[in-house]
Amino acid sequence: MRSGAPGVHVQLGEISDERFDRLADTFNQMLAQLEHDSQEMQQLSRLILQAQEDERYRLARELHDEAAQALTSLLVHLRLLERARDPESAQQQVKELRVLTASALENVRRVALDLRPTILDDLGLASALEWRVDEFNKMEGMNAKISITGLDHRLPRDLELVLYRIGQEALSNVGRHAHATHVELRLDRIPGQVMLEVRDDGAGFDPMTIGGSDRGLGLLGMRERIGMVDGELLVESQVGKGTRIIVTAPAP
Ligand SMILES: Nc1ncnc2c1ncn2[C@@H]1O[C@H](COP(=O)(O)OP(=O)(O)OP(=O)(O)O)[C@@H](O)[C@H]1O
Ligand SMILES: [Mg+2]
Image 1: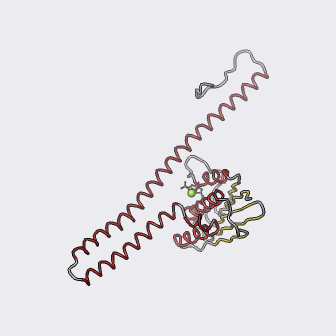
Image 2: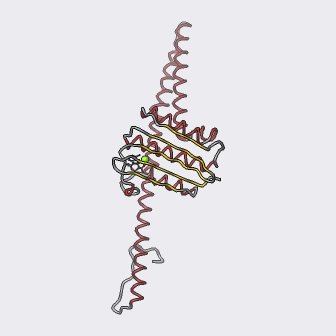
Image 3: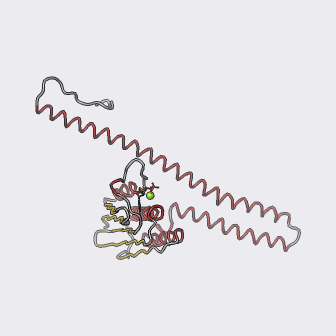
C-alpha cells in the first residue's frame, strides 16, 4: 500500500480475532474509498482536459469565422482601393473599409469580453452581472431580470470573479437546458454575507446526478469555485419544476 500499488487489501487469515477483523474491515473500506476517489479524480482530470480542448476549439473557430473572415474582406477591399481609377470609387471603397473595420472591431471586442469582461474589473459585480443578463436576453430572446440590493461598495476581487462566473454558468445552463419562460437573478449583500440566486421555471433535473460521469463540469465548477471563497452552493431542482441555484459566501 505504501508503494502505491492499486487493489491492495487486507486478507483475513484462518485464525480470527474479532477486534482484528473489525480493524481489517475498516481498513479495507478505507482502501476501497481511496481507490474510488482516485478513479473519480482521474475521470475529472480527463473531463477538465476535454473542456479545455473544447474551449480552445470554440475560440479558434470564433477567431477564424469572425476575425479572419473580416480581415480577408478588408484585404479584398484594400486591393480594390489600390485599383480605384477615380476619387468617387476610391471614396466608396474607403467607406466600405470603415464599415468592415468597425464590425471586425466589434467582433473582436465581443470575443474578448466573453473571455473576461473588463466591466467586472472596472465597474464591479453588479454591473457585470447586469450586462451578462442583457447579453443572455439578447441571445436567448428572453426577459430575465436581476435585482440587486446592498451592493453600494465593491466586493473583494476574488469574490466578485467567483460570483460572476457562477452567475454566467447558471445562466448558460438555463439557456442550454431549462427551456424556461421566467428567469430571475438576485444578488443580495447583507452584513457579513453575499448571496446570489439564479432561478428558472424550466425543465429542472435531479441534483443527485451532479458529478456523474456523463455530466458536464459546470455545476462541479460552481461548487469548486464557491469553495475557494469559503462559501456554499445549494442546488434545488426537480424534473418539471424548475431550478434554483443559490450561492452564499462570507463577505467582509
Ligand atoms: N437550469 C437548468 N435546468 C435544467 N437542467 C439543468 C439546469 N442546470 C443544469 N441542468 C442539468 O444538469 C446537467 C449538469 O449541468 P452542468 O452545467 O454541470 O453541465 P453541462 O451544462 O451539461 O455541461 P458544461 O457546463 O460542462 O458545458 C446538465 O446537463 C443538465 O441536464
Ligand atoms: Mg453547464
